[in-house]
Image 1 (tube, rainbow, N blue to C red):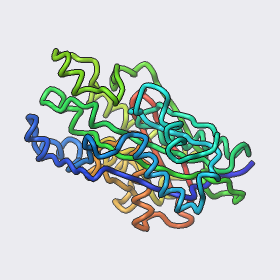
Image 2: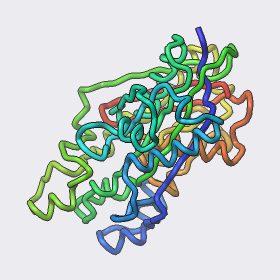
Image 3: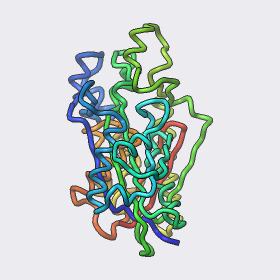
Length: 335
């Protein structure tokens, strides 16, 4: 069997910066309250009319990843697009990217595993490459959260957390044993699906418009999150799935050079860091700048860590995520 390696990375975030102070002008919140609970200082939001959408941001990130992989669109055999906020109910973002990038009639697959979406997508890409079916797979995580948030005091517990953005990775076939993606580990527990959920609709006509049309309480169109319950489950599952990946490869936490957790909450990342006795240099966090970008958070962080020279040849890299579903997963990668 072959192995798969990450041959190119790219990311994109909208130019519009929304600070905690900006949010305090439209809802009852403040910078200290948000930072204490989440670690977030600012996030990026799409501005209506700026040309950005879930798919277009995915394209921008993908173009950078392809260039860095020294590949063209003709080299890509499969697109895997992870998001919870597609441009429309259907079709999904994968075929939208295919059209925008003028790709040939390759398959496009959409992954709907929310915060775990990128790890799930990496796992799927890895399996296709390892079996020899495909040589180059484009994996994208992209989110447009801002249009679907209740930007009032009523929704502040969720709305202050999320941001928009996209990240992409190209996975390429390799024959180097012991390098690239060593293993991936995926789980879900649907019993808790409603603890972090959204019952409708699409980004084309989303929460602000629907609330204006139907201004009542308990609207099912903005996200619900049982924050404390999610936090308690996240710290347990993060640790479990990281340990599972390390044990599968006869490794320990002392072998980790860089942990890139899903950027859900800085407090979760710090809790996991403490459990594994990792230094600040061994964990990459950028939630302070971007908030939680769900399926885009790991590829954005991974891209930035690589750009900053914090990931080097031979390093052991661990990706881990937990989110709505509940779903969680990890990927163990030898760079």
